[in-house]
Image 1 (spheres, rainbow, N blue to C red):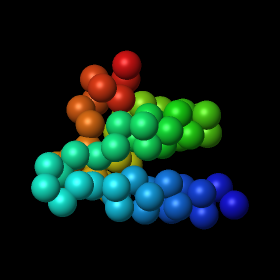
Image 2 (image 1 turned 90 degrees about the vertical axis):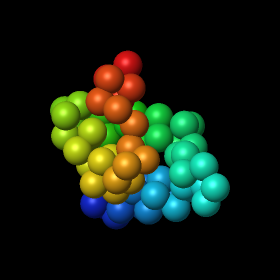
Image 3 (image 1 turned 180 degrees about the vertical axis):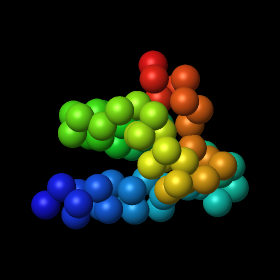
Image 4 (image 1 turned 45 degrees about the vertical axis):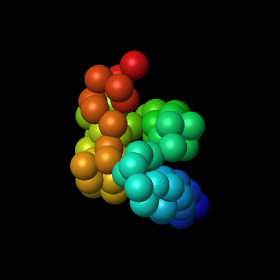
Length: 66
């Protein structure tokens, strides 16, 4: 079940990129960060997952940390 939720969140997040600005919806990003942190993942691991899913549109590590 957790793996399905991970895939769902990442697909939702990567699908929320704007065509013009290339920005990711901040609310969805925060929700994904919170979801992974509640699963017990380390911040560096969460940042790596976001970077893999979003590429250049991923938030900075400091943003994820805060």
